[in-house]
Each structure stands twice: as structure tokens, then as C-alpha cells.
Length: 315
Image 1 (tube, rainbow, N blue to C red):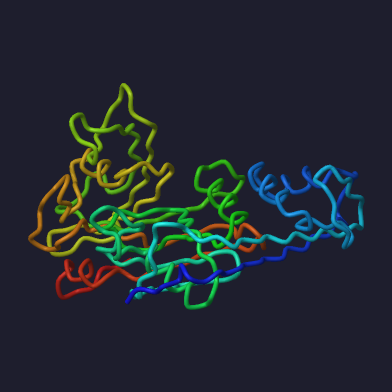
Image 2 (image 1 turned 90 degrees about the vertical axis):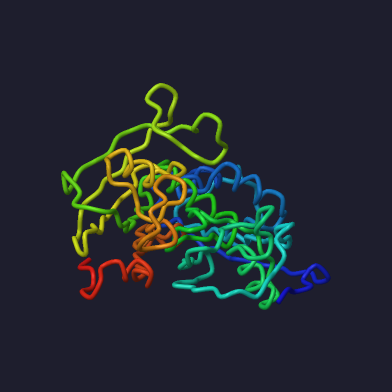
């Protein structure tokens, strides 16, 4: 079911409060916020609202000097919603939610965002409906995107500040990044059972979708893998990404000689499963606003669990 949200106007505000008790020396507001992980773009966005930044409850500019013991209050406001994302009532498995972010367990077969052939069935459509029902604006800011047929955990930022900080983490530009661990199923016994794949990736010539190993022009790509279990002639493999290139795990495991089963692009072996056997099962990161250590897991989907046969996989 679609919603007629375009007829309404929504408003969102997130208030952040900081104290400067631990300041060793005085510094401008802009320097203080950059130390907290705010990007230059975040500061520009805050400047657009004249009362968005307050020092000791008084509106101030970014060049205002903070002294030890001062208080700083930020009002993060948004009123617009993402265009071209119609709200549609779809199942949405929300693992975690607070004022700054959401963690969602995306099912296989659901695209992350609308496209020409998937305009009403994406996770973005479901989120647009979810926020529409709460009378809140929705700007789609997915941090770690998954392929349509990859299941598992993905992070969605709820405002531009958390989006900027999380994006920096995923790009390894922050001191503490986001650790993404996947589970994949391949045929046979992987040898060696543990290791690191370092092979640059680039576009496959003649294709706009497929990627390939390209040692001359490809972008750096690093994947750490470890076999967790072997059952029914297949191996369950844990993979941790050091980089996040398109189709990285799928290409790297094929390069190793053990492509994912069910992968219609790189190994169309559909005997056991009808999509690539890949699941983003664990996410670990430091909360961009609170600094709290966060960790989430999503159980192995039924279609991947069945490949093991009568005895469950040991994870």
C-alpha cells in the first residue's frame, strides 16, 4: 500500500548537548565540532539555521570561542524528504533504532533503493512509509549498501550529522571504523581454510554490472576469510571486509577458486539456493553521537541454513 505523503509537511529536530569541561585550551566552535567528528559539510548545514548553534544558550557563529566550562547546544533540523522514493507498506525488520540511526536486517530479494525495474519494492520505499506513518521527514541515507540478493544488516542514518560520521567510518577516514562480517557458502573444502585475499577490482570490459580482478587499473580490495564449518559437501565461510568494493566478496572467493553458490553473475549453481549465498551477519561500530560500542547480529536466513542438510551450521 502506498501513502500520499507528498500532501503533508513534516519536521525533524535532534538536539545535541556538549560540555567543554575537558577543554585544555579555548577554541572556536568549528574546531571543537571537528574534533567530535563533524565534517565541513555538516558545519555548512548547521550555519543555514541562525539559531542552530548556541553557546551557553546564546546563538553564536562557528568562529565563537569556547572556553572550559561552556555549554554548546546544537539543533539539527530537517524538513525535506527524499524525492522519487514513494512510501510503500512493506515488511521492515528493524534490529535497532535510536534518534540518530537504524540497523535493519534486509531480506534477500529486496533492493536497497528504487531503480527503473524496482521502483516500489525497495528498502527505501519501506523506510519512507515507516517515517510517513510517524509524520516525520525521510531522507534516505544508507551507510553500507547491500546487493539486492544479499541479506543481512545495514545501517541507515537518521540525520545529516550521523550520516557524515558513519560515512567517514565506512570509508576508513575515522579513527574507529565499521567492522562488517559476512557469512557465505561455497561448494567443497576451502584450501587454505583461512587467509587474506588481496586483489584489486575493476569493471569487466563490455559490462556495466560485472566486476573482475584487474591488477593494472583496479581499485585496492582486501578480504579476510575463515572457514567456520563444512557440511553436506559445502563450506560456511566468515568474511571480513577491509575495503568495500562492488561485488568484492563474490569476486574474491571466485578468484580463490571457491565461488559462492547461487550467484547468477559469477557462478550460476542454483542446485541448493536460488540467490548468491551471502549474508551480512555481524556489524560492529562506535556510535557516532554517544561513543557507545555497538554490535549487532542477524541469524542465518532459512535458505542458507538448509544447505547444511540435517545438521545445523556451527558458527
